[in-house]
Amino acid sequence: MRLNNRNKAVYYNFIVSVVAMLLFCGIVAFLMEKYIYNLLGWESGLFLIIPILFAAVFYFRGRQIFEYDSDGEALNFKNRNVVSFLDKALNDEFPKYKLISYEIVDAIILKRLYITISSKRNNSVILKYDISYLNKKELNDLKISLSKVVKNNREQKRENIS
Image 1 (cartoon, rainbow, N blue to C red):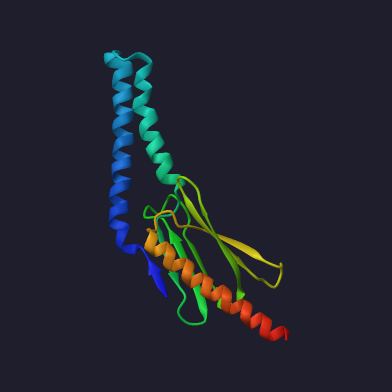
Image 2: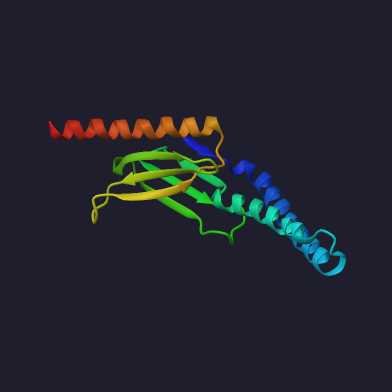
């Protein structure tokens, strides 16, 4: 199964542009209010606080573009920002049999996917991906696909033991 939200990259670029413009306009308005007009007093700080909150929420929600591919014998996860200088892109590919479990954490602002895989050196490794920008259908498809892989791995493990 393949899942991606690359087609929404234009939308996310627009949001980044709007947030950057709000931040810039907020700084200009704050400086003009503070040094030229001086009408509002302490309320002029809202010109900075509100755009900074928008920018912080957008940043802390994580990487916008998520790609998942479970076709074949490997699982492929890609997670990146539309603005490349914000964060390093993640790209992981590993065989399906290494997947032990997964967990989706749904907080108020963000959603994270935690993948536990087996490794040779350690017993397990946890990989983290930002899935805040997936819609409900994409999220359900991801859960179904990962559940199938985990279920198949458990059945294979039982067959190998007996």
